[in-house]
Image 1 (cartoon, rainbow, N blue to C red):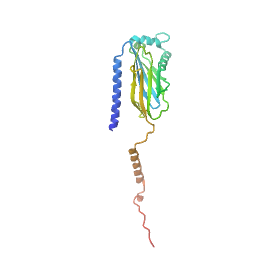
Image 2 (cartoon, rainbow, N blue to C red; image 1 turned 180 degrees about the vertical axis):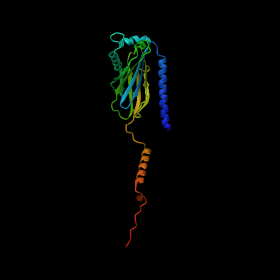
Image 3 (cartoon, rainbow, N blue to C red; image 1 turned 90 degrees about the vertical axis):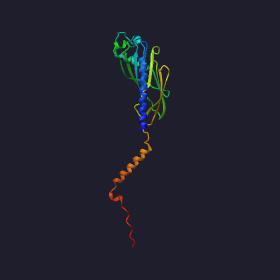
Length: 227
């Protein structure tokens, strides 16, 4: 029980620190910066990334022009999809040095008015499929090169939903445009603890004993009669 509480406490502290760091950076987000915050979820077979892109008011028009390819001051679905593909194409992701293909899952854009005021956030969700990994230690490296001249970056690993994955460390470059996540992978069919196996075996033996006919429990062999 104490180990379980300790794990929950560590997870809660991890999330609190991550949120505090995000709030500090958001509060310092300046008008001339393009804030790009990545949240990375490592699972046994997939990596899911949510990327929030928030341009300050002084760079919003430049970002808007990059998206609005025909210059009609409106964003068509094809223009949104095109920008999402360009951003996703600029992401670099590898596991243990093996490059991964990043696919766009979903993208959402704010209204143009909020965007131009520096209050709108583009949210991009991408995904990469992991190769079959052995149990033990691994690392995942994420890099974002979108608009490096005006961008500030945040990158954090989320607490994995699967018990098979444990994040053991995070290493960032000073700009946080690159994050390396150290993690361990447990086998899917991990063996049961010895104490649990012993308990189950004892319980099975008790069930078999109770299932025997009552006469067979105390029956003794009859003595042989001698002539």
